[in-house]
Amino acid sequence: MGRRPDDVPQRLGVTGWTAREAAEHLDPPLTEDEVRALITIFQVPAIGQRTGGRGRPADEYAQDAILHAHAIVIAARHGHLASPYVTPG
Amino acid sequence: MPLLEALYDLLPEPVATPATGSTHAVVIDSPAPWHPEAGPVLYLISEEARRLEASMRRDVTGRLGERRGGSDRNTVAALRAIEQLAHAVPEERARAACRIIARWIRSARQVADIGLEERAVPLPRLPGQLPPPCPYCGTYSLRVLVGDGRIWCINRTCEDQNGHRPRGHLDQGRQEGGITWADGRTTYRRDWA
Image 1: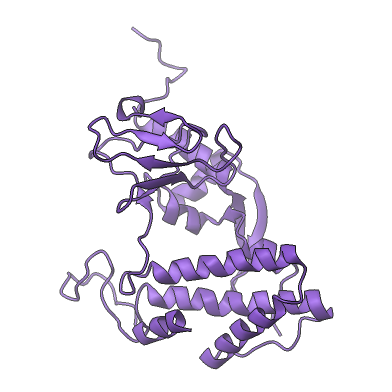
Image 2: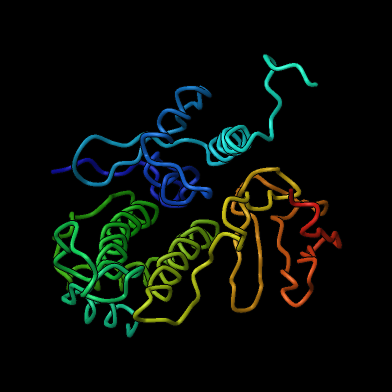
């Protein structure tokens, strides 16, 4: 007998993203590995775990935290953020 | 359940990816032995229907009930049970179930070979340029239905000045690419950079 859900409506209501889901939804896109790096660098805390029947449960992260971290990284990639190590002029 | 039947009908069609739309694309990997869009949607509905049924049954009877097998018949039975249980659970739980089922329906309607609903996409932009950030949360979270220009922010914590999830309309006819928001705000393409 497999694991049974404790609070299914909240879990199915999908309050967060797994790293894989984030990689599917983010635009401009990031790979799943890049999303995992983003989560590590910005110390995005896991808010839960997603069990998909088999295998190890995937960590779930707050969607807004990932979106904000993504926005910072993408803006930096495009040179829209000033580096503290570069003086203007 | 015609939508579910349509998904089952599509399932044995191992077509190429929706992006290529043809089986004559260059083969770089083994194609999935089922329909690449209908398969995952059916799996999602099959899995979540069983979980939702168990949760609602526990709300009503205090027990999760027998675990269902994986057959298609059991999926339909779980959906029928959810329909019945919705009359017995508290209203808040019934509404939560309704939102979950609406998500399944939307996913099914958005399968390209069913084609009943357009899939939201990121805002169109020139190559190499960034998409416009949401004017309320500053993230790249705006999505649009290209057909009718409806636009919204996918960030679930984002709010407009009225405290609602930002929704607006992309005025595609206007050269400056304006977005009119539900709270009365208007943003223009020149503000996006």
